[in-house]
Image (cartoon, rainbow, N blue to C red):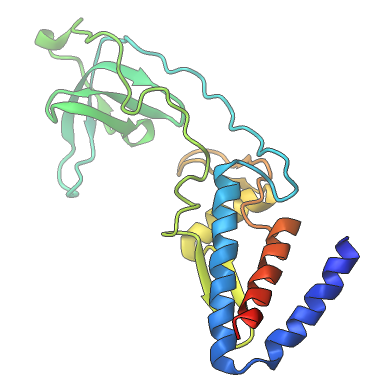
Length: 223
């Protein structure tokens, strides 16, 4: 079947090249949209082009919670003097991040451990004022991987006079490439590079190829 499909595709290529520029571009734009839709559906289903499942993301170690209060100096966003942060019921999770209730900000905030300027004694009025267990925003719900990457905002299509493409551009393409080929990358700025499993975000399946041929036949049948 693969050899037969390849022969049909060669014929389809000849037919495409025989079309005038305007109809050819219109047809390839439709093909690109069809292929992009298929790629999004497959990524959402967490499947490789061969039908096998994406390797599941690694389980993260549960954060340590209920540590009482903490106080430290942290760089201010405007580049001025570091501000004093008083946190209660903070959590020390993965990625060297400290998360807890920032009393001054009045809400849960996260801080990079490596950026802390200086640790300070906790003011007397805030000592032993643990706020119970932290409730992480979003809870423990595990969302499908690459949900945002598969959206139309990041998964793009394009055409020229001879071809069309479906893929990622800019910085997003670098992120996608790491997963596409199972490369090494840093999960955060200060973390060490780690290997990522190969999860093929892009790849035409036999069904995709058949659908693109159907689009060509529909175009020809429609005149």
